[in-house]
Length: 282
Image 1 (cartoon, helix red, strand yellow):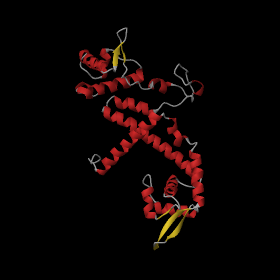
Image 2 (cartoon, one colour):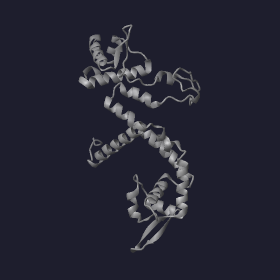
Image 3 (cartoon, one colour):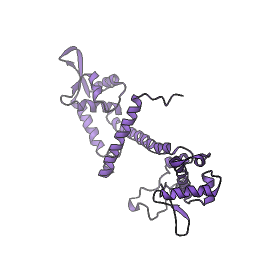
Image 4 (cartoon, helix red, strand yellow):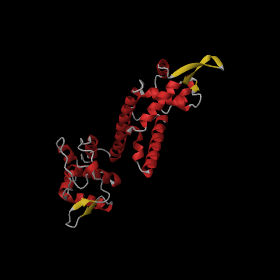
């Protein structure tokens, strides 16, 4: 552990030791002896390891079993069995008491993120490991959803950005007409190349340019009936698309917790951008 656990004090030192132990357990599925813990944590003696063990027991991370062996406690974060996942042959699937039964989705490749978390936990700051575990999942989910959205939009000869523009124009409300410069206020996310998208959608007959009665030199863009029909077809497809409707699998509590968490995350990231922090500068 490059001496981090040995020199870490207070909560930081405990978390470093805990992360290293949980990563070890993810691979070996055992808690080392006191001598093994001293080696794992880069401690000079078993007595130093014993003092840390006492702290972890007090925190509920470890406990003594009936045969006086250290075992995971109620606060121990048990990761998937990485050794078993990596060692499993393609197509091999041993059914156990915790399998999904008749609805089992079958064999699958081990998640590389779990292996990455185990590796990070042996040396990285626990705060970073916790952050990476969330941000990496969000990035993977976003990319997967974007890929599926692109495939869905292609049904109508569109890009996912084109669909976002049509949706924004729809949400303007009847008669679904607005000045191009004002349309950006209806975008749910930043959208590049709006002028080219307008040209392409007009060529497809999904929008049209109409005169602005209050400004002879200005034009409005307007959603056409074919454009509304294309958007309606895509919405119908979304009703059965897992990348769209997956939130319906969440409980009411999980759904509201996720919305609250994502709202907080968006606000924190937006605030850091507004403050123009210099953490990317050398």
